[in-house]
Image 1 (cartoon, rainbow, N blue to C red):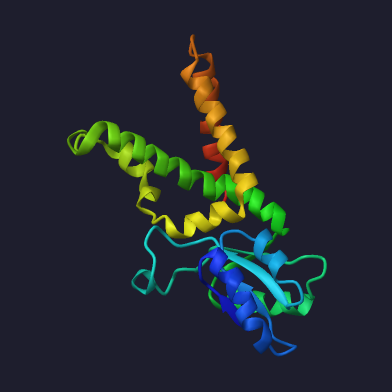
Image 2 (spheres, one colour; image 1 turned 90 degrees about the vertical axis):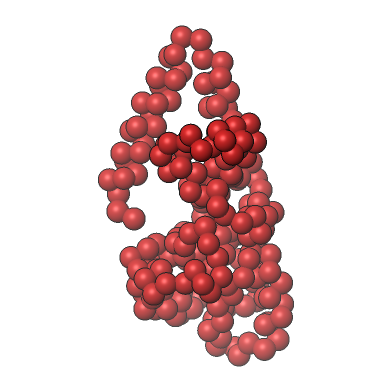
Length: 214
């Protein structure tokens, strides 16, 4: 087995580097945040796309910890042409690391992750940039737990996110458009009706998310 664990575009480049050295029975997987692009690039390889839903804003070996994958989702994205034996090999690795296997179509993975992962990162980074550049360090010193709790993702480095946007642009643009539309309705809300609707919807969806196990 070969596990590609670099940023998404580097993983795609590495596919060509490892391709000549693979035994016929070798299985290749990856840990990237988008799947359709690399699955398409892996044609002719026994490849099973993978995405562990874990980690934090820190990167590198110093951010490693032994329970990183424990009880977390690890999405695999086999296609109709993927051999079930290859899926079994990668699934065994995932379970050995303590994670839970979830199967998704590559395009569906990218659509959903654009909403539940990529959009939050971009929104929080934009929020922190807007607040910080307007309030300055002195203003930020007055921030309470609301801003601090809601901007944890603002500590993320841009490197891997450039690759995510490059390989999942259409779903991310659609997700950003949904958020922009909601913010625009809040901005233009005259009587508070839209604010009430959005807040009530947010409460309901937050409860629905929190009631489901990670």
